[in-house]
Image 1: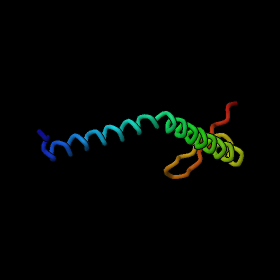
Image 2: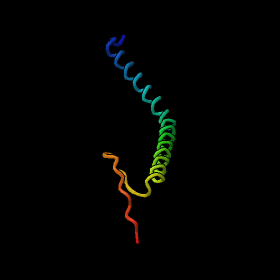
Image 3: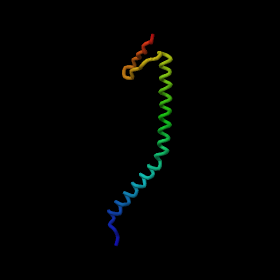
Image 4: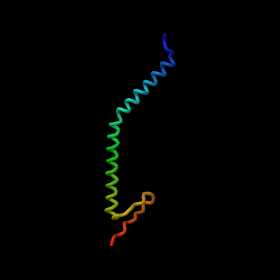
Amino acid sequence: MKINEELMEGIKSAQGSMKAIQCELGSLPLRRVQLLKAYTEQQAQAHAVTDAIREEYGDGVVDLETYEFTPNKEKT
């Protein structure tokens, strides 16, 4: 006895989705490494910009909304 075609297509579809999910899960460790590298690169870029701001304006705080720089108060 043959199983009806609609049921067979349903199981084939589910198995295909499961296989695709397994492939995605297998690539997660590599993707994690790539994301960590990209994060580290952006972090280094942010530090470089912060250093450039500090060199030009001194120590202080930048408001990222208004671009206003507020220098730190000098301790006496």
